[in-house]
Length: 580
Image 1 (cartoon, one colour):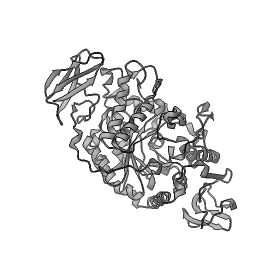
Image 2: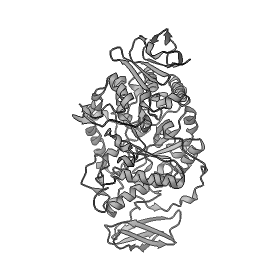
Image 3: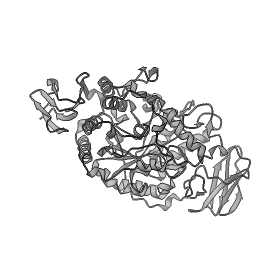
Image 4: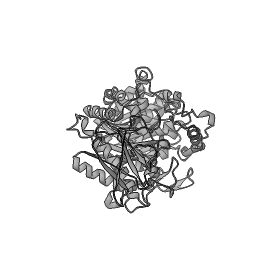
């Protein structure tokens, strides 16, 4: 006998429909929970809930949705899968080389099993952690995953629960840790039945992507439990090593114990119980390091967070773009501050926001921050989903790669970046409702109006062509100039992993020099110096203070050191050792 239960405080009557049988469920007094013992509830059996004699709808905590978001739920016994990672322990996050990927476009197959075929490639590149964009169930066959509605069920078109477990298992067998991107600030609009069951959402706050989640109003205890249990499930039952929490700035909670703090505490308890290291990574637009402070310091206890300011500072120099939030960046001084202080905007005035923004980072190392040259947002949230490959030269990509991989932060790559993929990564959806299809495209144009997009420039998110165009071309990395860029990335990654100073996240060991007018930039980390020339002409730089001795790596064979003068070719970078 198995017990089936559901939290449905808004229902006066709840039935369990299972194998063409309808059973009346019992209300647990005062809790909003309904339950029933059902002999039919075994692995592989389909079921649904019927509220107030309405139509059957899926379980809010369904672990398996073989028919998609509108279909019946299916009972999943997690003990059926045989794991081979009993002795697995993830590498420390401080030593990570992260690789973000989207299951649907990463391989030709667009599945979990398809991704497995490229894991050896990632390991050879030097990757230590892969980060999956959301894989929970969402409407249609293809999408980014941020409009998920079945938070407990892996997307069936990707391969469902068994496929996801095979992928994680295969990663661990190859020494790769796995991070999952989870979305707890909103749910998708299509196939979302949560409001039928209880007050999962609130109108007390606004969200740009849908109704805000009820984390602090009446009956919010069970809503908080729903999301915390979801996080614990991914770590416990699918053996993920870390979770990246999307848009934490859009999680509104006025409770004394914020939902992120509650989640972090429970993850640490699970870590102690299972004797495995787990990590939480936040995405935040607030430039607020308090997310990372310990519980004792009244922080949320999150382990790391994405650093958008570093990306924006580097991107603006490479492209000279001034639209939208890039209007706040563009000088080498901004990049220098990002290297030394993490946030460019740490309490100072932002022209883009027209107010002071951020808070200084104090007593936190670079190991708490993720740096990137590209990611799904910074590519996909452009009109054409174009990569830096379409904006700057291969030579400048080499310069930028050296700077972010040798930064004091944890480096993260986005799929195909390592070979300068020519394929875009565009925004695509597969909604069924005609009005929703129209609203999605119009909404994207409004959201990024500050960048000067025109309606006709935006690929139709609902077109299958938009999705197909975003698939990686795996033959590219074998061809020039992609092959040379790939080898450059590989050398940078392996050098970072080999040299102690490049894994030191202490900002007091970082020295930056630059010339704004001449457009050269130098970073010293311990005995290592990265010298970059952003200009389109040769530079002669006198730098006796750095005591340059030995060239370890150069993007141009004609870069040389003559006595104390460094001769840097146009758009090139060189890595020096100051020790003999």
